[in-house]
Amino acid sequence: MRQSGRRAAIYARYSTDLQSDRSIDDQVALCRDHARGQGLTVVETYSDRARTSASILGRDGLLRLMEDARAGRFDLVLVEALDRISRDQEDLAGVYKRLTFAGIDMVAVHDGKADAIQIGIRGLVGELFLRDLKQKVRRGMRGVVRDGRHAGGRAYALERRLINLAAVPEAAEVDFAVEPPGSWLLSHVPWTEAEH
Image (cartoon, rainbow, N blue to C red; front, side, top):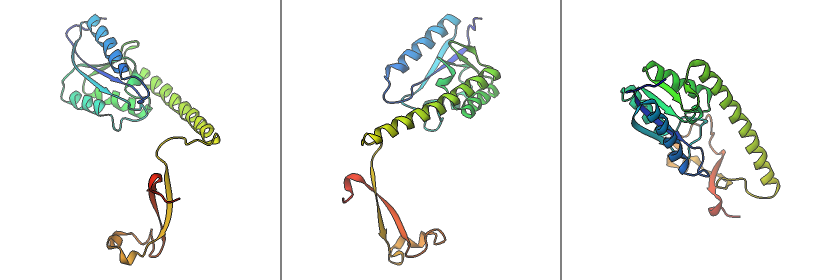
């Protein structure tokens, strides 16, 4: 069914910096072709590069889209697939609920207009995908460690130092119920700076 004259916002996202930045361009091109075929007017494009689908935190493009939705700047959100919005059940349902409340449809190129059932199913499938992916990543990291290599991230050395809290001006801010005077405090030192 053609939706001539409606204003569309496109949203695109890819997950990690290991993926190509071209992924955004490809998603947007696919959505623009779909919009043209449906008689939609694309008024804005939002994107998040190298951002996980497991959370909406830190996704400035999606947050800006939601602000513009509240302001009524478009009639529908067009995505390649619903997992571009989120693979987290709660986040996907929350975005859908807020958009629906604002009178804005969510449309996936391959699945059409989203409804509550589709959001529930896609959210569940996405959640299962993330759980499975987490287990596989952990398994891979254990293998890397087993091979004697570093499994990722910046390495830190932990150093124990006895600090005389009475001699430290910031000690007045220390909650002694948590850190009693004379207790051992753990400090983080970047590995490159740690003595070994």
